[in-house]
Image (tube, rainbow, N blue to C red; front, side, top):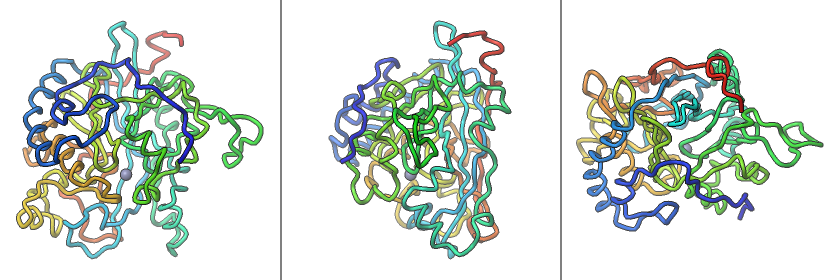
Length: 383
Ligand SMILES: [Zn+2]
C-alpha cells in the first residue's frame, strides 16, 4: 500500500447525474453495482439527457491542441484482438488540449488536459524496460514535438494562470514537476528543497477511484504506474472528482471506468459539436471498426459483433471499458463524413514507416475551437 495524501471529494463543480444514475453509483462510491450488460443498456438510455445538459451549458471560449511526442506502443495492446497486423509495434502521438472558459463570476479558467511530463513518463516500469531492451536508438523511435511549457509559451499563457490539470487516468504520469512536492526529490535534482511547481496555482483533478487504485495497486495495474512519485504531493494542489461533473460552459468530465477503475473522459461542446477525449481507444476507428481499413478491424466487428476496439494494455475491467467507449461514441457528434464519432484519442494512432499496415483510416489530429486568450495580459486578473 502507498501512503498517498488523504483527499476529500471536491464540491466546486456541478454534478452531471444521468450516467451516474444509470450506473447506479454515487459520487466517490464503488463501481459496478449492476451487470455490465444491464449497465450498457441503461447508459444508452441516459445519453440524450447528458448531451442535452452539455449543450445547454454553453461552449467554452477556446480549445486548442498541442502535439507532445510520438512513440511506439505494442500493437497487441493498441488494437487488442481486433487487428490482423504483423508489426509488433504501432506508433501513437500524445497530445495536450488547452481549454479555456469564463466562470459565472467572469473569471477566465484554463484547463490543461493530458499535460504529460514525458521525460519522467519514461520511468514507468513498462516503458523503462522497453527502452532498456530495444537495440534501436530512441531517437529513431521517438519524435518529440514540443513540451507542455514550450507550448504554453507559444500560446502566450503564463503557467501561473493555469487553474486545472487533468489526465484521463494516471498511467505513466509523474506529476511532481507540474504541481510541486512537499519534500526534496533527489532523483529530480532537488536534494535540499521541495520541487517547485510549474503550475503554482493549478489543481490536479483526479477521479476518486483512480486515487484509491493508486494507493493499492494490483499486479495487473502496477507496470503502468509510478505510485512512489505521488507520496509527497501537496494535498492543497489536488482535488478528487467523484463521477461526472461540469467544469464550465460546454466543458465536462465523465467517469468512463474500464481502461482503469478511475478513468475519465473530457467532453467538450464546441462550434464543431460535441467531442470526447480519452485513451480508451487509440484511433477514430476504434470507436467505429466498421469504417476501418486497418486489416482485421472490420472483420472483428462483423464476426464478434463488438462495436468498439479497446486500448487493452491492462484489461482491468474490459466490459466497463466497452460500456464507456459506447458512451463516448454516443455522446460525441459524428465527423462531417458521418463515419466516425468525434472521440479524440489523447494518444492517437500515427502512421510510421516501421509499422506497415497501421496507418489510421481517419486522423482527428486535434480539437480547435475559438481563440485561446493569454490570461494575464487581457484579463488583468491577479492571483
Ligand atoms: Zn493507460
